[in-house]
Amino acid sequence: MSLINGLPAHVLLVHVVVVFVPLTALALVLCAAWPAAARRLGVALPLFALVTLVSVPLTTGAGEWLEKHVASNALVRRHAELGDGLLPWAAGLFVLAVVVWWAARRTAASGPSGTSRWTTAPVRVAAAVLALVVAGGAVVDVYRIGDSGAKAAWQDAVGRTTSGG
Image (cartoon, rainbow, N blue to C red; front, side, top):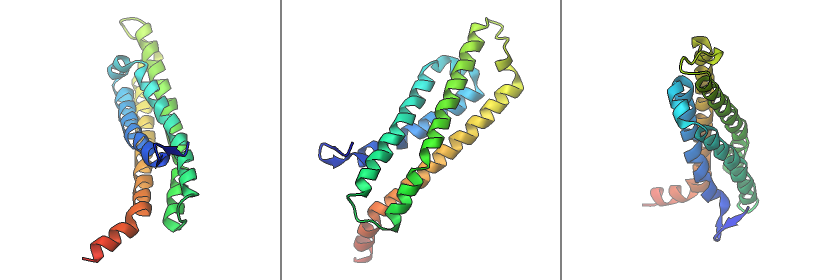
């Protein structure tokens, strides 16, 4: 995918990543820490994480096309390098979302007492901590990638207009 309605696809698709990664991260941490939220969200959690996962390679692929069509400089190369590192975080969000959804589903299926090894405090705490680490890493990575992309796209333009008057 290279162009959408005459615009570089990357500049449009990046908004999906910027919105979905933090929202998926927040939903994952909430569901891992609060099983009732996981039961309420149900299959929406892993589906949301799947959209997040699929959007990352689409966006980076469109970014690789754009990189070949703009002047190369250190800022563009840095942004491209950082962008390549987001896929493992998105995959981690997806895998954990599936595990949390599956655990909540299994717990709900075990009956009203909810007795399952997935409801024990150590397992829930471990899942919540792991979700917090992966979610935090994904959000920080998106911020770093976005910051580097904004600098690559706007530094010269903004520097000329603000220093000239």
